[in-house]
Image 1 (spheres, rainbow, N blue to C red):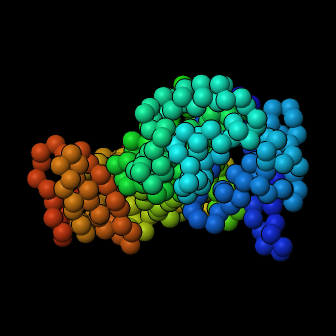
Image 2: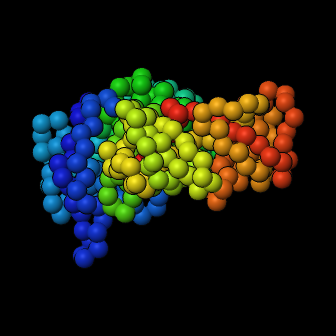
Length: 358
């Protein structure tokens, strides 16, 4: 296995920006995800690692070896494409064996390695089937087996689950993570799906407009977003603007549009947030942290009118109008009466759940 380093990598297509100043180090054996909307530069970055694109500037290293201008077939990477790129005129066995044949591996070793990898991806007995005789999930596993059978240093996956239905995506997601843990292979995964990224990754790089927005663990990305884009792109959140009206040691008081003052902790702030009296600040508040307040006053209690209520069985989701803002909340169903549109409601926002985004 190998680590991967992108040292201030840029890519332009003519005058158009592909990616700008990507600087990352991916540890050997790490599951690292490029996450962002379409056109953000994540696939361009992956293709530079694979060798299909050469950087306009910067260096790419696998371990201590620079591979910036090394052609794809000499990089020892395995890649799974979004459309799988399987050969329809070949059997499952022949598709998986293709990379070994290109590398002139003898027939006996090819047979042994293909059968071993078919067992690993749970395709035993499918060797003689044609590709058009397989389900979408089985085709995805063939593509994965073909990438793994060559025993690459690095596994690259470009939106490999996008063609599968929801249930199959979840099952295959688990299978990919199982294989990655079992093999210990350095894996770089491209997706626009936040759930995939959060559930599978050791670390995530969030991209937008060809630029890196944030790199961190799923927990860091979710709970400590560095800016409004990351906060809004990763899961659901309430983004409220307010004015800092007081700072007492580690506690920050912010006045919101309703006139109420909320308190949070300065330690829960992006480096880009300006925490000074009189400054405007953006607060990120996750719906699951907001809880219905039964009775009595307390710290960080906001009041408003229910705009929408949704009962899901395990939870009750509310959208509440607070001043000029809407507040989304998700409460565990404790059997209390469900409020309806127009009802008054009090909601508690814990201090520690407020994050000051840049």
